[in-house]
Length: 406
Image (cartoon, rainbow, N blue to C red; front, side, top):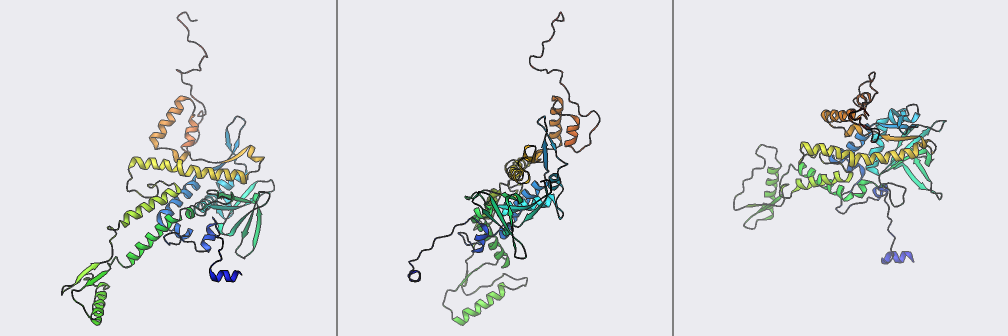
């Protein structure tokens, strides 16, 4: 029965929908304009590579510290904890903390998911992080709601890890609430357009931007004469001589061009708009990504701050909360937490910093050693004391004496 329906075209198969970018790559998923998109090709676009490098490198370069809450409500660095060294110095014996964090951040921005295997010591503390290839990891949601990770190795074997053994970073949750969505797959049409434009420019450059057109004769010519003219024209156009491109047409012959120049087709302007769209996908300001058409000194400084506030800060919070949930036990989270230090990116120039230090020092809430610490200078004796402005006092603490001294 199914064979007859299949032959007659009456059988209808249900369409399989999936947000998995690797499944889409396996079936050769194409966009509306026909350009095939995969993470490798998409990240090969110059502005796409710049956006990924800017976010991953800048955030990986920022200090990611493990803090311990103090009894007075403050915080102090938990340098005695093994996790502090993992996040600050060496993630594992073969990878520095910067390299590990850069790999994880780049994976999140490209694939929407990043995985790292956790290594615990005998005291229940994370002692190492080992990044995993997202293409080798399959995530399963059990009936209990917990997650299970199946990791394939180079030898073809599969190892199963529990939820406590894997750090899972996600760009944006999919409908299943388990996997993250890939920005490249969500904005596939934009990358399709960018890749198509890049291929078009490459083809034009390969032809040395030679025009295409037709020779129009006033009278009918024979087949042999037509072929002779085409051979001579092709020999002339493809010649490597210095007279290349100079044509002599007589007998009323006219040249009609079929191709448009880049200027007539506004090709260059279209590529600029596509580059801006790619910057919008990851929230990277254009001037930071190297698009300086409308850049000035003032807006470049503002966009550098916008990079921290609108792009790096949300990504940092995403990483912090995932690490707090995976790298610390429930009991440890009561006294320990992981947090980025983004203050270095928000600091202004020397004059702005020193003016701010002066306000804090004269106001009485900054000490000399605190200021020197932010400027990477050593402490000095007596630098931990705070100033008390003479013209300020607590409300209701007392009244000034009158003329009689009372």
